[in-house]
Image: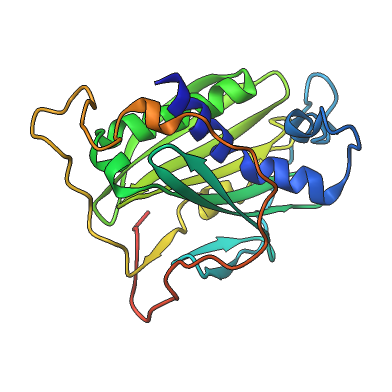
Length: 258
């Protein structure tokens, strides 16, 4: 279990680390993974002060990803891709991220797992470990947790509060793919566009849900390399900017009603 949690944590924060590298706001490589939230401006002072009650959200535009989804973001995101090797196979990841002038970070990332890994464990395990991995990375606490669905696929929304900032997040398990949507912001400033972004994910020709291997596999103990041990031994590699082999966008897309 801890190995899979670490993998999910790494995938959930992939976009943040990539964005920190690209923006080069910190040159110390030992701080890149943790500096992003610390750099969020705190213009409201220590007590935060009163924020403008009618702060307008940013203008969102639709982004079409070659991985097979659409999402609305306040600008054109930077894209980072990489592959993570685990004993059960290869996990392909992609992260679409941007930072606004106000210091708010919007990110959506995907992690495509081998089907046997997804089939060996209940969807709740992936969703919960995605949440726990992000929470541990930020050393924060979880609140406002809710179960969601997106076109019938299971999901989870939650907020992570940490000493250095706040994150609103959603995870969805769509076939063999885990989606992680994040909005990172300083709570004294807020993120007026968070709700519109988080509710904008549209799936393009999504795959069917993967049936669990074994009717009584509640403990995840399925053969053929589908146990927690197969999700360990993550090999850290630099993001691969090359294209993935994910399916191209198709005409039909379905969007979750808010």
